[in-house]
Amino acid sequence: MLCPKIIDVEALDNYKIKLKYETGETKLFNVLPYIFGNWYEELRNSSYFKTVHLISGRKGIEWEHGQDIAPHELYDMSIIAD
Image 1 (cartoon, rainbow, N blue to C red):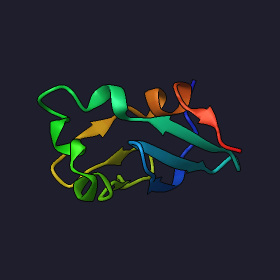
Image 2 (cartoon, one colour; image 1 turned 180 degrees about the horizontal axis):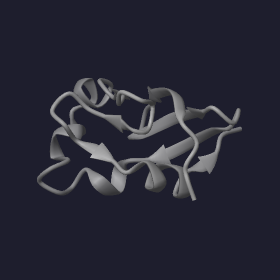
Image 3 (tube, rainbow, N blue to C red; image 1 turned 60 degrees about the vertical axis):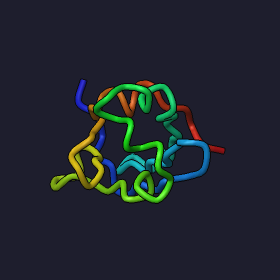
């Protein structure tokens, strides 16, 4: 299944990101389980964490130094925001 395109991403407190999709859905993804590995440890810095942005083509997100999370993982493992 193809994941819908992300139209906006916003870093929130407690290592969560808010994702808005072209379908009108708004979902929350918890990044906390990822920040303990070597590749993601830089995300522990809250200023750096807030640099999250859309990848060209709106298929995913990434941070300034290339850390990313697969689009299907973002969509499938996030929860609907209130």
